[in-house]
Image: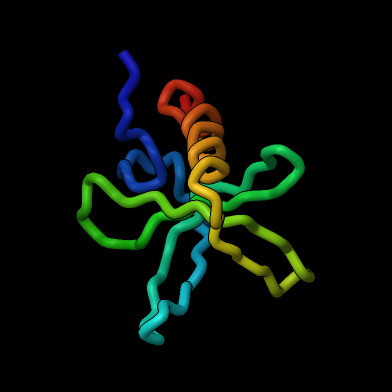
Length: 104
């Protein structure tokens, strides 16, 4: 049986060498939201980034997915996925790539 809680926060000590990347989003009200990067993935010729807000102690976190462009080594551009149809396809690809059975 696979332990689905085995990740960088599980406390086993195996993940201490892994660096967790974060991105700070500025929201419409000018507040900031720090997010943990889950990963960047290609789909249908574009790159997308998946991340989750960094809320300590939350078991079910919201997953945010944006179109991702790396402008240079220190600057990125994130864009909303405007089309619900495209977003649904990208979310399905995210689920396929990052499902629990693929993270073992």
